[in-house]
Amino acid sequence: MMRFSDRMVARVYEVARAYALRLGASLCGQIGTMTPKLSAGIIVLLTIAYGFTIGALAMADSGAVSVFASIGGMMLGLLWVARWMVAKHN
Image (cartoon, rainbow, N blue to C red):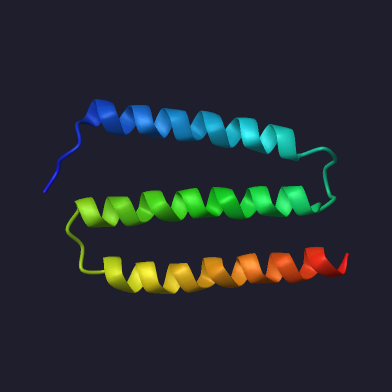
């Protein structure tokens, strides 16, 4: 099993945080309005957070990885379908 150094984990976190802040700043044109671009950006950020959580559970050798992965994958899939349906009708 591959182990990551604290420095490597901190760097990945730093890059992901910078990306999320840049993406959030570029997507938020007006507060209170949900645009297709904003909804897609939110789901992408949730997907990134979901991936990091699965990675952390896997590194911790947790038995909950498979349950979390299957439920989370279904939820993210439903969010993408709902977003597609709403954007298609607008």
